[in-house]
Length: 511
Ligand code: HEM
Image 1 (cartoon, rainbow, N blue to C red):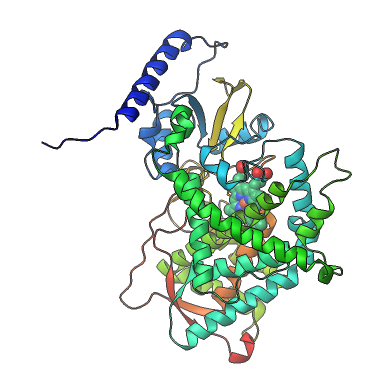
Image 2: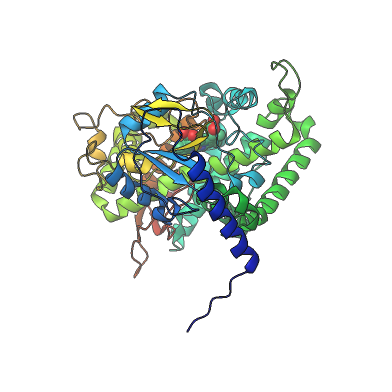
């Protein structure tokens, strides 16, 4: 018979927590200050509550539970409670009608170390520090004017990317799409934020960076037992924190190096200050007494490199994978771009607004494969009533963006990749992903909507347009397309897309 060795300390702690759990439930379990019911949800297990029902593919697990319990579900997980919105109406109720209440972030164990103890923007509570960081980002980096100011950087870096793929094409070498996309995006973010290309070429170093981001986003997205039962957090039973701390140490040394070089070269940037110059100029000053610490500076750099690179690359990777599955869409898109741009130069940013089918393809990829399937968690300190349900204080909110994009009541053939639905005359032609149409909210909605949504849209359209116009794509001989998803804060393909490019423009167009 197989004997399992149980750590006596772990067993004693688990037993103590179980007793405490049962005692608290007995004492206060049914005493709620409201007559309204909690939203429906599965009965949980002792200690871990509903956690075991969710499974490793949490977006799909939660969607399965929602099909049984409804679009507003309440899950008790250990000592914490979580409400999940799984259709457009539910998302609208939380992110529009009750937006302010849910505009905080939970103090997630996995995020603490990597975000300099929530000194960044992404995990900051809704308050003056968050407002200041968001304002600086909008003014100097991600708002309409700032985006226009940095157009030359995007053109230069995406130009490098196309030429690098051109060299692979000439030598018949397949390209691992996400690696090359993330390298280009990290260089753009690096140049705008700290005036530095972070990688000379795509290779070992940039691939390690990409792996680092994937590990951060995968670990950051997992449900951590320590969040459900804080008394057990120090044990790190799933080993998530250990892994994240290791990656964070590497990331921190990259950021420290970038900041040191930045400080040493500040005289060179008098003519064209970058984002960190703008942040440094606002560290103390006329910001309602709000100051920016060293940890805030590092935190915001962390945000921009993590939230600003993989998210856009994932959309382009999935869109291209869908087009390899369905080459008719690829041809139609190439024809559209040829007719507007011609065949003797590369696509440039000013072409993008004239390409409706390109927009439709990108929207369809954002619908079917949103880069952050459950968005980022929201949090309400106060109790409230939503759609006739009582939501207790200190409840976490998850919006299942992935399930909303595949809701059969909102979308025809929800699992098919059909960009035509977004063209004029199509059933979804009026739907826009920028946070007003709740059937399609890949960037979230409300006050905490993605701070980089405009940049994200430009990145996705521009990369997609360039890749499809400049190259034909096919799978390497003998390889099959694996469309499996890898769940985390982000949702990349399990098997990164590897494809063989062939140049389709004259040589002079690539120079
Ligand atoms: C296609 C690309 C992108 C997608 C799909 C995406 C999606 C999202 C989503 C779903 C959220 C959470 C919204 C919520 O809490 O309800 C978010 C937050 C955020 N994103 Fe993006 N994002 C993208 C690109 C970018 C880019 C390019 C940047 C910056 C360079 C960026 C920076 C941020 C930041 C800073 C936040 C946190 C906002 C806050 O907490 O106030 N994102 N994003």
